[in-house]
Amino acid sequence: MFVVPDWIDAEIWADFEKSRRLMRKPLTDTARKRIIKKLEDARSYCDPNECLGETVEKSWLSVFPKKPLEVVKPKEEAEILPGPWAKRL
Image (cartoon, rainbow, N blue to C red; front, side, top):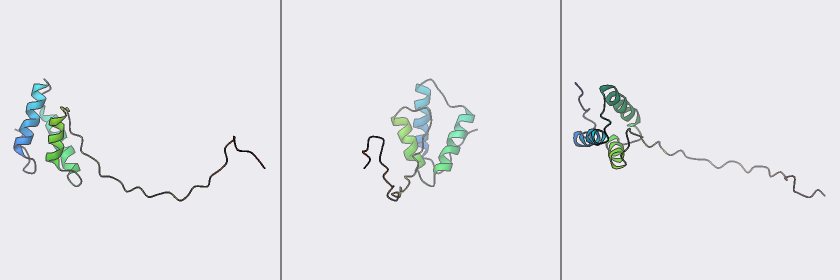
């Protein structure tokens, strides 16, 4: 029997299960395990309850944890090469 982990709000999980049933796509035990695994893997950078709430709100079939934003470092100034349209001196 499936038991919702204590780090997931039972009410939010129930809403997720209900939304899947209303879409006529009820969760199988395998799907439950895989979704829990996705949420568990993403716990370090994403709130699982927020992720489930967004899934219900947007009527998604699965969860899509938001990936952490990467800090993009500016590249060193690239050498600007003239294109074929440039006039040669």
